[in-house]
Each structure stands twice: as C-alpha cells, then as structure tokens.
Length: 206
Length: 242
Image 1 (cartoon, rainbow over the protein chains, first blue to last red):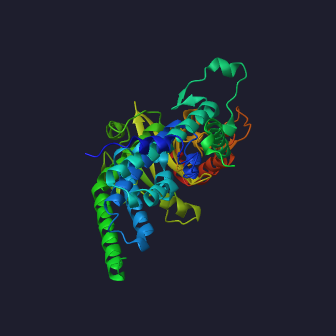
Image 2: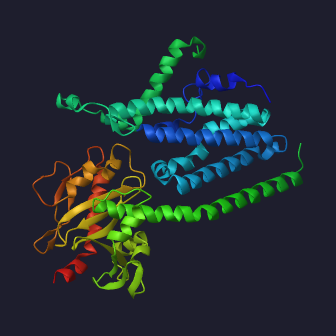
Image 3: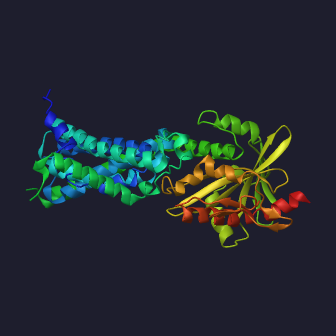
C-alpha cells in the first residue's frame, strides 16, 4: 500500500487552488453557484470525474502515444462524464434535472484536462487519484463559498430554506438581485483571490 | 516513440471500447430513465391540480384520479380516448403523445396536430388539465394548466423549464409564481384573452399576473406559451360547453 502523500490533497486547497490560483474552471464556477445545492452536486460530479479520469489515464500512461494523448484524455473524460450523466438521469433524476447542461460541460472543464496532462500522465495511479481528490476539493470549496454567499444575499435562503427572518424584510431589507447575476460570481471569486493573496505573499507576482 | 501503426490500432481500440461501454450504459439504464420521465409527467399533471406526490406514489395517485384521457385534434374532435389505461376509442394514446412535436405543428397551423387533455375527477367534479409548451430565455419552458369544469377558470398551474437562470427566470417553477394563476380566467365572454404575465400587473384583472423582476424574457415566454398553446384547445372547450 502506497503511503498517502497529503501534500497532494492539501496544496490544491490553498496555494495551488485550481480556481483562485490557477484560474481554471471559472466558467462553471460562475454558472452553477447562484444557489448552494447545484454548486454542491456539481462539485461532487467534478470530483468523481477527475478522480476516475486521473486513475484511468495514470494506469495507461505508459501505453498512450504522446502524439494523440490529448485525444485519448478527451475520450476518457467524455466517456466518464456521459456515464455520470446517464447514471444521474436513471437514479437521481431530480438532481440531474437541476444541473441540466452543466454535467455535460464538465468535459470542457479545464481542471480535469489540466490535471490529466500535468499530473496523471507522469505519476503513479494512487498518487493521481489523490491529486484528483485534492483538486476536486479545491474546486468544491470555492464553489461552495461562492454559492453560499450568493444564495444567502441573493435569495435570502440556504439550500432553499429561508434563513433571513421575515422581520428583516418588514424593516425594508431586500435581496440583492445582483448577487444572482453571473458578474457577481466573478467579483466574489476576485475577492477570494484578493484575500488569499494578501495572506500568502508567495502567491504575489511582482 | 510509437509507430503510426500502433497509434491507429490504439485509437481504434480506445474508441470502439468506449462506444461499447456507452452503448451498454445507455441500453441498460434506458428503462429506469423512461420510467423517471413517465413518473415526472404524472407528477407534473398531479401538481397542476395541487396534489403533491413523490416518485413513489405518483403512479398510484395518477391512476386513481386521472382515469380519463383524450387526444384532441385542431377542430376540437376527440381522436383517441384512454380510460383506466385502456384504449377505448381511436388509435392515439393520449399519454404517449409527444407534446413537444405536436406543439411545433400547432405553431405552423398544421391541421394534423393532436394534443392530449387529462381529466382529473374527484367527488364527481371534473378538472381539465392541458399541457403548454414555449420558450424561455435559455431553452424550453413547459407546464400544465388545470381548468375548472367551466373550462375558463384556472384552478392550478405547474411550470417547469430546461435551464432558466436560477433565482430569476427559474422562479416560474415556484409556488410563489404559480399560485398567482389560481382563479384567473382565459375567456372574456366568448373572447379568448389568455393570461398575460406582466410587469406591475393589475392584480384585480382576471387576465394578468405579475412578472418576475430580472426574469423579463422568461416571463414574456410564459405569456406567449399560454397564448399559443391554449389557443389550440378553444374549439374543444367550445364543443364541451355547448
């Protein structure tokens, strides 16, 4: 049994975060975070796909001809995404309806392809799985934070349960519709990047 | 370095193998997916008459209350009837009608269009539920409208959408929006007025409901959907009234 290399899980959560540091997978981070629930389901789906894809590519890494490696990676990712989509449709229909096109769009998520190319092609299967888990979590944590803030201030709910008391509304409080619009997700991601960089000087470019 | 021969063989095996897995998955999961779609359709019809159901009891409730189903053509004639799951008249199965395809025919005034009417019956009172289909901002929107037996007053609606913006257009599928339709009427005397979804609607008007702020295009889509789809049923409603 290989020893667990915790760095592979820890780094993507902070100083190698796929969204805030590498700025990958931004599209879906903006699209599915208007509410918390789709953000969480999306995170789980991406995590499953990235772990499995990393494992498969890593297992076959020595047989994959380098000239067609991107195509091979793409086929594996598409295969997994379609399988995930079909399984969701068959067994958790409600969730699959909520995510609609975004499950299919995992194929184009740069994080998945990026990790296959940068890590799984040159590392052992077990490490690759850990790397996939770490990056999946790194993606998930940002989505959940953004989804939390957007749903709370945009709709006054969390996981569709109202959390802001009616008395606030009676006093004139209003939900901020800007929060639900995609630009606000970009601003929030920007704020997270700002906070992260101000606390970790290593990340700052000159 | 790998030879060209190796690359071709590798690619072929990879693709054939992937295709095989996908085919197996698609064929194997199809019955489950079809069942989900059937059950969802039943749930939506039940939702239109205000009955909450879950994936487990939907089929049972549906069979209990929606015993009569008709297929209607553009002249308002019944071309197929399903009672208690048995085809008693005509050859068109109302439940199996591809509403989306037929609604596209309605749009171009094709006389061959056939659409279903689902009749909910409780305590001897009939409620007529008809499907509606239209376009939102990002994709399709659809729903079911339930009419009281005067074939004019809406007793309930139920909308759904493919991928409207969460928190904005997607709000059409929430009770807060749907409940506004209760008690509205689509006819003014004999004139068809439909129900308009409008900014700052006059709440006392029987033909207007409030639009969703930030969801203007979806709201307009609901207006158009109601107008275009319900028009088809006017001849049928008139034939029932007389």
